Amino acid sequence: MESFECQGCGACCRIPNGIVRVSESEISRIAAFLGMAESEFIANETDVAPDRKGLVLKSRTDDSCVWLTEDNRCRIHPVKPDKCRTFPYEWINSDSHEICAGLKKLNRLLTID
Image (cartoon, rainbow, N blue to C red):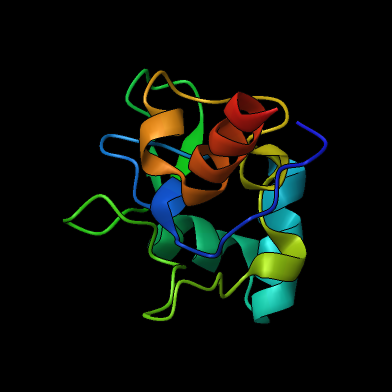
C-alpha cells in the first residue's frame, strides 16, 4: 500500500450508500475551519447516522459528499475527517479496488511485478 497515489478521481467521495461518521473533535475542527459555530455545523451539515449512533456528514442525492467540488477536490481537505484521511490505508470497501483509480493503478503495478 506504500505505493498508493491518489489519482484525484473523487470516487472515494462518491461511494454508494457511503457514510462518513464525524466525532466531536472532528466537528469542532471542521466548524472552526469553516468559521461557524459547532451547533450550526451540526444542524446544517450533518445527519443522524443510519444506526442512530452518532452523526455523519450529509451526502448529496447522488450519494457524493457535499464537500466534494466539481473538480474532485475536498473543500475541507485540511481538516477532513479521519475516515477520509485514512482511505485506503486503514479501510476499504469490498468494491474499492474497482472504483478507486489509485487502487486500480496499484493493482496493475503489482500484477506486473
